[in-house]
Amino acid sequence: MPNRILTVVLTATLLFGCMTVGPDYRRPKIDTPDVWPGEKTEAPVPVQWWHSYNDPVLDKMIEEALAHNADLALAIARVDEARAQLAATADLFKALGGGWDIDRQ
Image 1 (tube, one colour):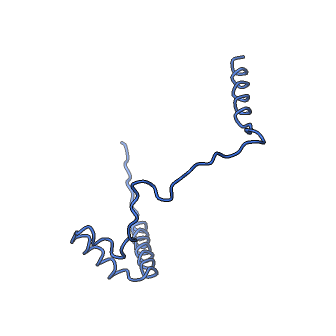
Image 2: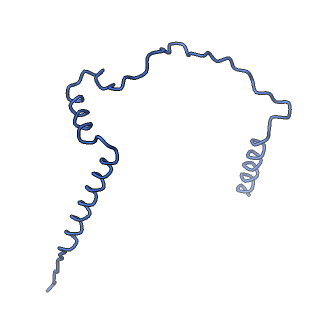
Image 3: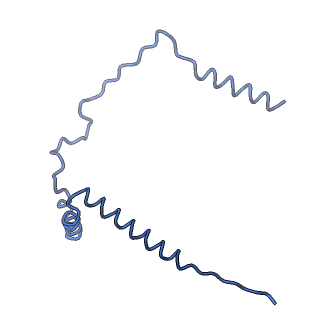
């Protein structure tokens, strides 16, 4: 009996919660500013944004990345090549196999 009462209450709550507000409902007008307070209108981010950190390690990493991955297609090909090499190595270890046998006496 308590389960039926709970089911009726939950069903009624669900049905009444989904009712519309009425045919004469109008969305309230909210005045919003064009620029939010405290928002700065700055120039766009520079192309070499990492120089703003003044970090020689980051500069070197970006330099190497740009030198070795000049083309996205080339980078994708390198990832595919690394995956293929990994799969070939995994197949090699599968072929070696091995096992243990223990006999109780």
